[in-house]
Image 1 (cartoon, rainbow, N blue to C red):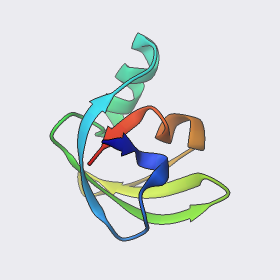
Image 2 (image 1 turned 30 degrees about the vertical axis):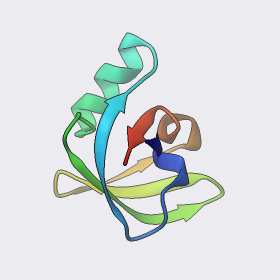
Image 3 (image 1 turned 180 degrees about the vertical axis):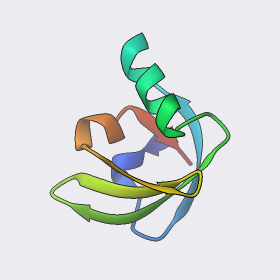
Length: 71
């Protein structure tokens, strides 16, 4: 397992765990970052990412990406 921030562009990864405070976890889950889901990095600039999750493109910062564990 590794944080989403370390994933290469174009790779599909399975979400295993969403960490952080309860408020942060709820926010990420509402965006579609749930355990068992598939996430693909579309682009990455200075640690900020655009990812495909649940057929939607979502922009997240490096701090949020570090809380999402994938493999």
